[in-house]
Image 1 (tube, rainbow, N blue to C red):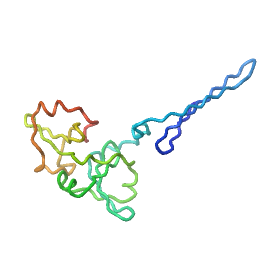
Image 2 (cartoon, rainbow, N blue to C red; image 1 turned 120 degrees about the vertical axis):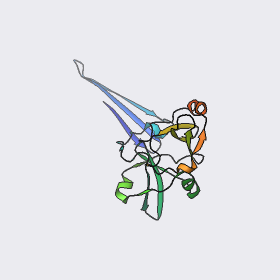
Image 3 (cartoon, helix red, strand yellow; image 1 turned 60 degrees about the vertical axis):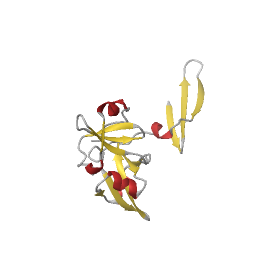
Image 4 (cartoon, one colour; image 1 turned 90 degrees about the vertical axis):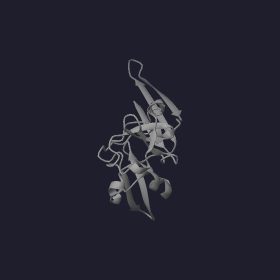
Length: 165
């Protein structure tokens, strides 16, 4: 039997082996492992594709948060300048729906929307990686702020995850 427990940044993994036979005995092995980064080891939430790529806002607690839903996780847009530089509008949601998304890492402050000058395809560039944005208007990206990039430059960037759907 194997069991994984999550406590803060630690993943504790216990395995128990029991062998019963003519000389019935039990042996127990405890293993403790620390993984980094912690975020990648946690069970991923059920992805809600209808919200991926959507900018959401909700009044939760003492403030209003604006976050981008990516891979079923809400990712904080760190400041108003970053929001206004990349996005144009957002979807207001009730606190229950907002809280149903697991928190992910913050959006990198140097993120931007790029458009391939050869194909016209839009990409969300974050931390030196690209993600395809099939319909930028649907996800409130500010098209006037898109930076035109050379096709070969964009294709040289690693893919940063699933496309924003």
